[in-house]
Length: 473
Ligand SMILES: *Cc1c(COP(=O)(O)O)cnc(C)c1O
Image (tube, rainbow, N blue to C red; front, top):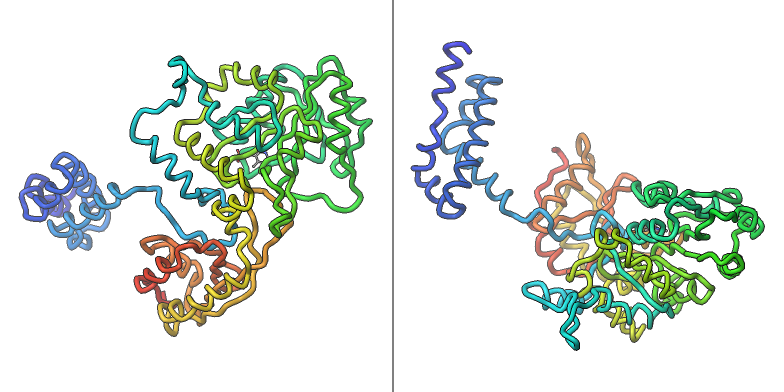
């Protein structure tokens, strides 16, 4: 390094010196001396780099005041929770990246009740002996689906993996070519099958599969017949699929289990509440499925979980698989799931109290009234830089459920006037910088806020004054 470079480095205050200053003392009182010291070292390291790259131009950024301010900012961001609430105004109700189903108060209360202390998670209070964690939800799953038995794992992908690994290890699983689903990147039926140690036998074609295709594929190596609900796409036109009742009969004739991966699955017939019909777990079981797998946090409206329901003999084998231990759920999930299942005792109550079902069945007129109330505050926050209007839009259910069915909704549409550069991206970014970040979607040269999922209207309106954005950039 040159002499001038060395003298620049000497202008960097020493860490000890920074800690002795009033601001340094204040940070130590709030965060502890060790933590502050480590952050100051990080900040000083960055300053040293800036000096060696930019020389004297960086001097203003490396004095004691600037270093302590940078440290304070870094301390704040390190101590703030990383996972935090956002407003989901994307129009996708079950948004996987935004945490899928919001939980009802009953589930939050149930989790809180057991979170802070010991519980009877695997302890039978009647006998005082070891219990089974599934027992907290199994009876309710059976009541609501007609299944004999059930078990719960981390998510539906885990449910499918565990089922296949238990019943089809080193054997063959027959699936229609029309149902080799990929769900959001990481879950693909053929890949899960391979990881489970089962051999996939594809039958039929993309658009048509017939009963004889299954009959012809069954060999002594066949472990089971499987149907995968094509949750996130639909095949239209010249199509044929084998009904569940026929597949169940074929499986029975060969003494094989018939399993259905329902994906979302629902516990009640949503068409009774103005939503499109999605197959229910009870329907699949009544049609002859020996096992059904489905998600806890899709249309069910509960916590992330995967449920396997069906025949007692098969469920017992699945629970004995050592992989169950690796895929099991914790007490918080079971507490929340139990509370959600109990709401289904009265379906009308489930629709009222489960946020997912309530949001999905929200009338467009109510959303429109909310848009009308919010428009002036939003327009005021944006000033002349953007035009705000109310437009019709279509929400979607999301997470692969009911892929072709859209729900009429209303959105606040923000169209920047003029503006430079990536003005829409910057606008969306400014809304994400709010204390409770707002996530919308960009469409047709505007930022859209679909209000279907806006519960906390007052909270949304109250933070608009803090929006920092200008079209000029
Ligand atoms: C969503 C889905 C899965 C995966 O469920 P997760 O709960 O997200 O793990 C598996 N199969 C089907 C058909 C699905 O729709």
